[in-house]
Length: 605
Ligand SMILES: Cc1cc2nc3c(=O)[nH]c(=O)nc-3n(C[C@H](O)[C@H](O)[C@H](O)COP(=O)(O)OP(=O)(O)OC[C@H]3O[C@@H](n4cnc5c(N)ncnc54)[C@H](O)[C@@H]3O)c2cc1C
Image (cartoon, rainbow, N blue to C red; front, side, top):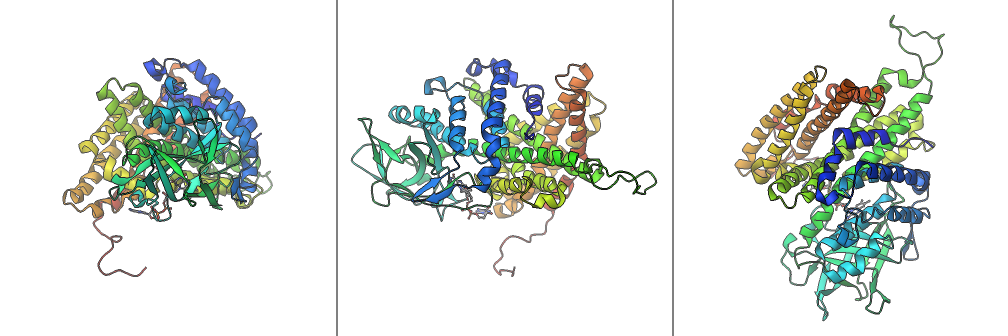
């Protein structure tokens, strides 16, 4: 079996870079320790090898199909859902009282990275079940919790999130699905259509539970009038029977990638027989849903990172096996009589591989960074100041954690495909599939444009810039640690310079916000996202290099010397080849010329 991810790198990130063990000191996570997590990760890898990876290409070649009003997914999915549920992962992070294990989300992120690297067409079914069951467990009444949560976390039923409508994608304030009160308290008649619903249908569970955003009759316009409902395919009755709930599948979207992961067009209540239970308070639905969306954004970052990771190992294997051409000798000439060399010996191929490695390992690092902040936020609930600090860092990092792996993962896979030359373009090899699979990551769960507006428009300005200040303090801590190693000093200094540049860029942009010219302030939000995430990822690389240096200098090495040296080397690569791009981006961001804002007179495209 080909290698599709590195357990050593994953464990290095968890234990040596991010010191996951500090989580186990919190009361919430007391049941866990490093040994238990190692066993869980190894079991996840074993299952991913046996149940997930063998089907990744087949799920692309035999996509989910729409037949007789149902979506039929690949037959291997049943075993994957069961295996994942049996490991206790669907409800692993839930409270004990909700049947969970109070597992740190960081551990779940690590497990999901293993499964997603093995097969990115399947984990979404389980991830959405975790997310939707968590919404019910957190915000719904006890009766709904008792009815739905146990069956969802056991994998007996799966879940979905139903937000998007034909006219309401990025802008959820335009949702029109209606909810009409019935005689039964908390029960509403649901009517409307939802499109692009991931995992919306499949043949493997008796029931699918949809978390649907809808507008109660007479509710205020905009986001303040949206409520959240639990809408099952089959409505459980008091006597244990089920009634068909008039939830229909109108079709399956045929897609560029992730073809095994069903994307349904759902119709609720076409025959007037669809009922939904209100979750929490009326008109608060979007606030509740944001809990799931924020978690799902990190999850999309994991998906993108994992696809790009699998692609990296596929192109690395090819580069190690493919002979082509000869190395340029010191004379500047090629010796045509010499045997062909493996392409991994060409500088340009090494550049592409290093770019892949730099993107995927730092992407996983920022995912663990964000997951740790989420865990600490939850575990310090008794200490509002600490909890708020972790929450602010998480809020700031979430759009970056979704967007960097999604956008740069595409670049990384494109370079990987290039390494295969003509074969990269052919279906004989998997690279073309990964290239297609990752493309959705910068679209769903809020496009890159929307994430960028969130970062610059909300997260940067949040609490008078407090989140950004907290992040800068974290970066400075890493810089100080790096300064203790001569080899790392130049890179630490470069990162400090970039913090200075960030202040300069924001100083310029803030001027527009203060004038009330928000369209101008946000005009280049996507360039700001590229700028900020390149620096944040540089911080992650410096952090990795510090951990590697610590191991090398102390001699306390869990892995080989080459392993640690490769981390320092890749950090240097990142600072030479990626970090300088921030200078050009800063130039774009501070340039006064305005070319993209719509004027009265529309210039022709
Ligand atoms: C495979 C797949 C799976 C999906 N799964 C789910 C799911 O499970 N549940 C669910 O509810 N939805 C799901 N979606 C929907 C997905 O979240 C939306 O497609 C996405 O949010 C974008 O909405 P849209 O397609 O309507 O595009 P639009 O909102 O029309 O956006 C089109 C373009 O305009 C830009 N744009 C829009 N508004 C602005 C703005 N204010 N400022 C700047 N630029 C803007 C966008 O960035 C984008 O480039 C899925 C979609 C796909 C393709």
